[in-house]
Structure formats: C-alpha cells, structure tokens
Length: 250
Image (cartoon, rainbow, N blue to C red; front, side, top):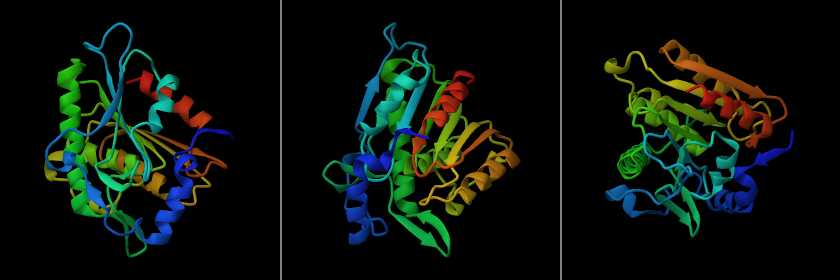
C-alpha cells in the first residue's frame, strides 16, 4: 500500500538524529508561550460558505513535525468543516516540535506526565479560542492525530469527554498513565473513537491499538478499529478513506 502521508518521511532524518542525541527520551528542549497561557500556533482552513455552525476538526501532528504536516489530509476529508492543525508547544529544534518527551515505564511506552498535561491544557485553550473565533458548532468538535498527536487525542478525550464528539487515532497508544487519570465521574465516555494502525508498525506495536479499542469499548465508547496489513508507522490510502467515512457519520 502506497502511503499518501508519512510523518517520518519529512522528518525521518531529523528523528534519527534526535534519537541518537537522546532527545526522544530526554525532556524536550524548550516550551513555547502556549504552555504558559497563549493559544497554540495553528493553520486553519475554512469552508467557502463560511464557518458559522460548521464542525471543527482539530489535527495534532506527530513527534518532530509541525502544524503544516497534517494539512495534506484536509482535502481528503469531509469538506464543509473548519480544519485546524496545531503546533505542539515543545521545541526539539527549529521547525520540529513535540507534545511531550517519550519514555518507558517498564516495558510499556509512556510520556512525561507534566508535559502531557501542559500540552493538554494548551490544546484545550486553543480549541476554545477556535470555537469562539470561527463560531463553529461546539457540539461537533473532533480531534485527531498521528503518533504523539494520537496519544494526545486519547488524553483530551479523558480530560474533557463532553467537549469532543469523537477522536481519531492514527498509529497511537493509550498510555497506562493516561488511563489512570480516568475519574469516577467519567465511568462512561460518550466519545466516538476511530482507531487505525499498521500491523507492521515498528515504532508503536499494533497491540496498543487492540488494547485501546478494547478499553474504550469497555468504557462505553463506540469504537471502530481498523488494522492494516503491511502498513508501518504511517497513514495509508485505505486508512484515510476509512477515517473520512467515519467522520461523515459523526
């Protein structure tokens, strides 16, 4: 399957350099102003007929990328929406950003909890600002992301389950530390969840997708799980078609 978008195609060499230097597991280099209160940098596409009352799609890029990366997906998804792609607040290097520093807890993937929560707050502030500025329908907000952006989408749905109509998970993981934040008040989550993952993903094993789908189903969400043979840590053509169809149902 030929991917139409790969987060690591554009930043693969950068990611390799960061891995060698330890930046994939060390704290991110610097936090931007969004961590301390300003909205995140974003690129927004609005429909020709105006934005009032339209759905809002919020896109969160992967590690080492920026707000321009997921714009490639906008023409391939439902058109009559406001599409906003956000920049992560932590700077790895000029033009390369992260939502949090990655780490392992035992043999499990995880991330720096303070940075995850700081990014969560920055995204929520930014979503509120987008809703106010573009007068979109606040009940039709979908957040989705690739890799680290997908991980943040899981976190956001647990932090504010009533804020998002649905979440789209493209090659992500539901961290144990994120699940641990689920409070009794969120025993049932009214969120629609799309989970897409490559069965040949060498970075985030597909077991994380299966585990997350089971967990969300147990907690009352409507989950679509799509596993793609031969697909690695990328977004493929069939996955985009499946995701677009899922979005049209929301």
